[in-house]
Amino acid sequence: MQKNKKIFLILFVIFMLIMLWIGYDISQRTTFPGSKGNLKERISNEGEVQ
Image 1 (tube, one colour):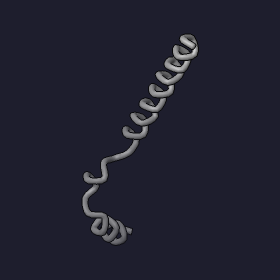
Image 2: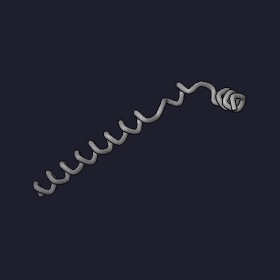
Image 3: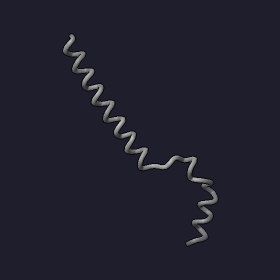
Image 4: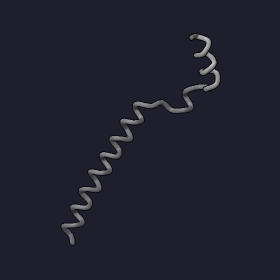
């Protein structure tokens, strides 16, 4: 039983490290929604440029 607990713990730690790495990767590729400004103004400005 002790060996099974160690294997489970090791697999859990590896899984959590992978999840943290994926979360960090996604967070670096996206921007915070509050930093984008007003969406309606951006859409109307982009339409005028084209």
